[in-house]
Image 1 (tube, helix red, strand yellow):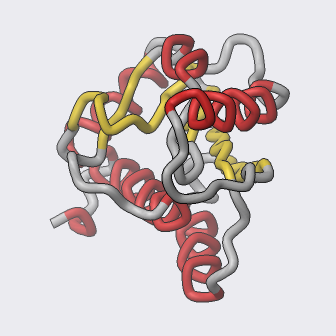
Image 2 (spheres, one colour):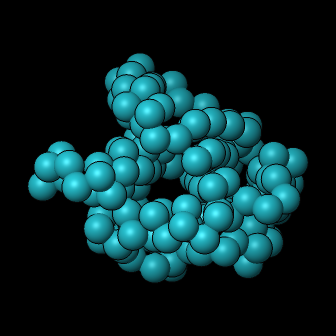
Length: 159
């Protein structure tokens, strides 16, 4: 399986980078994981809706350059569907059974993902209604992917 994570912004915190790298390493027997970072746009407080949309669209264009035909596209979106860890494992397993071995996850920047990317997604995944820093979401996502593969293997890690 090939899992691509396309995320807006660079990770600056060493502890996040170390955690992400650890889970990517743990995932290596199960999937080839590729993380692509695109630069974020400058933002300020009190942006108008028009300015927010413009920033999302610019970041969306950068993300779109890396989208591959035939990938199963999953957008991380607060308005998406909440899954338990077991349900996420089942989704990944089912994708593999259906021959969808190329999966791309999209993580937007501090203002979210462009509407064009959300509408293009095959699935919209939410990690709950809480707001998380987009850098932290990468760590949470790779940990949940690792947990999913352990659930699929019926390994006790997920308990």
